[in-house]
Image (cartoon, rainbow, N blue to C red; front, side):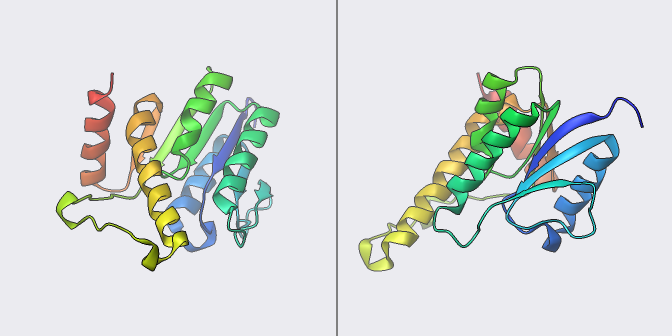
Length: 172
């Protein structure tokens, strides 16, 4: 196989339990050499260079983002594949540091936000819950803001595809 692409693929979940992400990895392996960043090494994928972070840490997401940035800068890939809004914060980093790299964004989750049902979180619910909810909100906002910069967007269903098309076309 000649002219293989250099690829970095980031997934912030256990790829062995989600067929969609594993199928994406298999497809990426067909077009290039893949450096994979996650907290679980993909099973039966010996030709993947895995960068594994500690999911047990309360700072796992921060460690994941740091490892993604380190891997992107060291590999200097042709393609950066990102899975869901956990990775959306990396889009401007890739655009700034590797302007010629293609960004493939897998937007598989459809988050329906209903302002009337939004609950105010207080300290009685726990500080960690409050932080988690704020991080979730932040990641959703990042996805909405940066999705327009992805070169290719994969959507899990028609509703998500329509949502992504509207986000990408309404951004400046």
